[in-house]
Image (cartoon, rainbow over the protein chains, first blue to last red):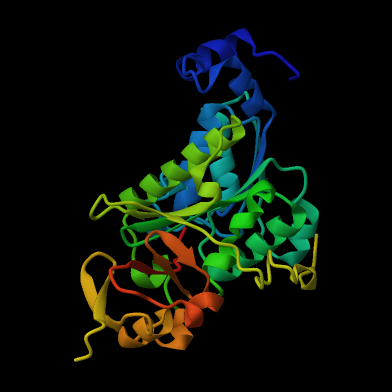
Length: 259
Length: 76
């Protein structure tokens, strides 16, 4: 493992370094880690902030949207002065203020096939914090093809869903093995509503799993999907199964454009 | 009423009557009025194990199973 922690990093991270599952070796792993976050909305705000605070060495933020007044209840890194500014840039500025020992890269663009070819490289983990099915299915397909671990989180109303897809655990399938397809007209935050506190809970689960994965721990979410119900506090962990005919990860996946 | 009628539970609060050894997941979804168009965005688990959609027509229920039926969500 290259590069030691500086004295300031030892002080900054002292509380988490005490954890048996973390220690100096784990902190060095985080420092070396490169994470891509797709979507700088509610999930992206909280997840990115927790990863920045934890000391993940490089965070790349991607979003083509700008901050609106109706975002502020749940997209907690943004302030009134950020309205109309690009979310990726505003969030990056906040993260740099939070932790100047890490590198933050901001990309004001939508995730699509052409940008997948440029950007889905050399990341240790990709976080899906997007707000639409088109991006979710494309990101899943492209991460499977590029053999990049993907931690997918979504939230609506008071409910969330969280699953991890990794090259090493592909026998448990991918996002598209769980949901064959879905329509963006069905539900999103604009037409269904969402509780900011539920968003923060789901994003915190996502960040927690991301950190544990980067520390080198095995995640149950690599072979399951977690359904988070913040109304009943009754979460459910369901075992996944690979669909051998899946267009993203199945035996015919060569039909998909690989990166 | 045939003697092999049984029930399965759906999302811990609903009971659906099935014909044991004959009814499939597709029959249950039809009973719940989840049509095939909406069902593409739906996932089903039996006793906490997800059944991929292609296997629904061949997945026969025997009664007593706990079904979890949930839709994909996209919000972020």
